[in-house]
Image (cartoon, rainbow, N blue to C red; front, top):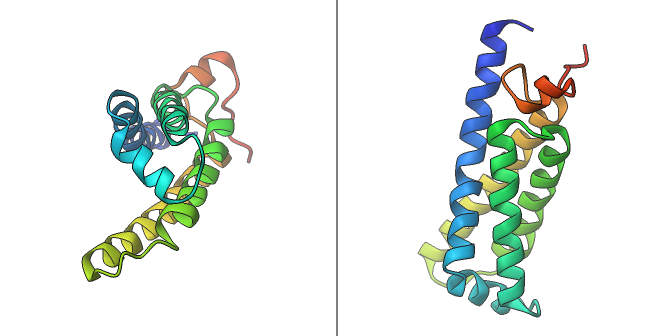
Length: 141
């Protein structure tokens, strides 16, 4: 793979990691809003699930950033993105036009992210990664 391709994979990893690192950190440091959304969706132990989701997002975001176990983490984040789209944004319309539009945008964003993470899981972390240093990031031709 060329240096340009590896450089672009690095840029993609940085961009794909940004949201999950920040969102995870926010959930861990201030869980109230997310716990309310989880409880409102009918899930039990909302605060505990918020902390688990926050740790998951933070750790998987960091893994993507540094290129560690990217093939596995890519599949996990794709599944997480689809799950949250379906259970937290698709069925919950408040009746206000603005919230309905925001939920529609969030569903589209989550499915788009899932596509990016599936692609990342398929191509791997690239040469500029921990996976490459460990010999685990070869792209299948």
